[in-house]
Image (tube, rainbow, N blue to C red; front, side, top):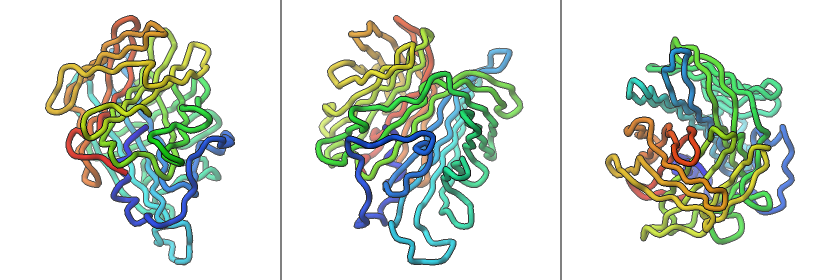
Length: 339
């Protein structure tokens, strides 16, 4: 469950096209399914992580690639024909310096300007890219204010979120996504002039429809805990402030096995706010005796997008029955979100 709002404007011209639906029974095939699915309207590859250098200087990083299908046909022979539009976001949290940096870039595929390719083992937008070499995924991003080059190696196998091959987001056929997560990746590389190491999280989703008209935003958490377990939890909010019953999550145990969590299996309670955003949360999963407090690494990790609504996404730390790190995304607090 990630930033659907960012694709809303880009997908507007795709309405009326016939796209494949995310429905139960999908036959996942890896590594092929780590790459493009152009028969679905929307897709993203989402990397977030927490790293530090040898002296303990801490960073959070984010690199995201979005694909928005515009047409299922390809009648226009021009290389500039907009069959797919691509958007990418890169962000860096300098935790100890208490600074947050963000950049974005929209592109069409054109003559290789942006794309996603199983054949090339690559997802890219300009000189921002994720390149696969066997199991290693290498991230590169260069912006006017920061740059990083990071090698990511999976410590656990990818897991499929949801039930029966789909992560259902609302009532009705196809209001779901196919949602794959690498819950723990070892990171080594450079951020600006710093040599860093740590851990990362990667989400890959593809779908055609997700949210219902009365769903206005969500709160999404990744947790990488020191006891070698991970969680993904999200709540979908209605316009009246109530929580949608299709909110759900995934618990990944120490062996790497995924366990689906229904809405009744966990609680997310907001605490201290910075502006409209709760930057502290109390998270509980009683059946696993998980009870932690999430605290933002710094309060201001707001992405003020030029191509979509503003949202908050950034590094968090967890303390309580377990300790760890992760990322938090909050949407719909500064304007309605819909898809």
